[in-house]
Image 1 (tube, one colour):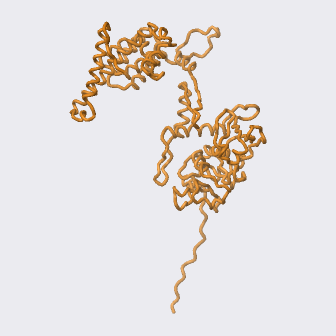
Image 2: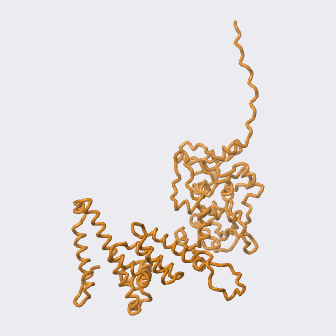
Length: 483
C-alpha cells in the first residue's frame, strides 16, 4: 500500500509520506546484490536507523489510533469497534488490532512519557508495549500518583533490558502496590468482619480464571486459559518432574521436544488421577471413560475408523485399544444405526491383588531405560484383551508407561493373531520370558536381530533385593596320576 500526500493535507502527514518514499528508495539501494558492499559499521548503523524508524512510526500510530478511537471513526464507518475498523483498514489480525487500541488508550491517558521516549528512539515498539501492558494492570489497583511513579520507574529501568524484563518489573510493582493480605473494602454481607482478607490482585485473578478446550477437528485440541498463581504453581509442580527427558538408551536420546514432553506429562498426571484419585461419583459410579463404537469398528473395519467418547471426541480404534488395557472404560457396542447391542463391564482391568503382584514383579515400566515407577504405569495385556482374547492374568500382563504403551499399541495388527515368535517385521512387542519376567521386542528397523530388551534400571533394584544363592563347594582338582 502506497501512502501519498494530497493537496491540503497536514504538514506532518506530508512528512510521513515523504519518509515512506525515502525509506523505499533506501530499501531499493540495499538490494541483495548491493547489501554485501556495506561495512560492518554500516550494517550496525542500518539496523539502528531501522529500529529508530520503527519506534517513531509506533509513536505516530499510538497518537493516531487514540484520536481515531476518541472521534468514533469506527461508528461513522459502520464498524462495531475501533479494533475492527483498524484491523480492516490495515489488514491486521484481530488480536494485533485490539492490542494497538488498548496500547494507544493507556499510553495516551497515563503513559505520555512513554510515547515521547518511543518517538525519541529511547524505547523500541516491544518495550513500549510492555510498559503499556504493565500500566494497564497497575491502573485498577493504584492511584494516579502511583501510576505515574510506576511509569517513571519502568522507563528508568528499561534501558538495555528486553520487554520480558519490563513485564517482570511491572508485576513487581503490582505486588508492591497491592500486597497480599491488604484488607479490602468492608463486605456488607459479612458484618462480623471475619471474612479472610484478600488482595485486589488475588480477587481480580480469581474472577478472570478460565480454561477452555477446543476441538480443532484434526485429532488435536487447543487448551487455553488463565490460571491463578496457586493453580499455575500446582500445574508446574506436577508436570516438571514428568516432563524431563527420558534417559538415553544405547546412545539414543529422547527425541521429543520440550512441548511434546509437557503434553505427555499432562496425560500422565490425569491417568494417575483417574486411576487413584479421590473423585466424586458421577451417576452412581466413579468418573471414567465411556466409549461408543460400532461392531464394525471393534472388528477393525477401516471403513468405520472412529469410536466416540461421551464428551464428543472421536478416537481411532488403536487409541481405544491402547487405553482400554487399564483405564476405566465402559464399552458400548452399537450397530451402524447407533443402537446399543451390549454393555460391557470393566472385566479387563487388573484386580488390586493382581496389581500388587505386577508391582512386586516388574517394579516399574518394563521399557528399556524408562524410570517411570509402577504408580505411573498401566497394566498391558501381552495377549491383547480386546483383539486376541487375552486373559487378565498376572503372567499375561506387564507394567508399561503411557509412552511404551503407545509404541506397543501403535504396532501393525497381527490379523489373524500370530504367536509372539512371529513378530518379525512388526512393531514393538512384549513377551514373557522363560524366567517369568516380561521383555520388550524391538521392531526390525530398531534392531534387525530383534533381541529382547529388559529394563536394567528396575532389574538392578530387583536383583538388589535378592540374596544370591550359595554356590555348592567345588571339589578339589584331581591330581594327575603318574604312570
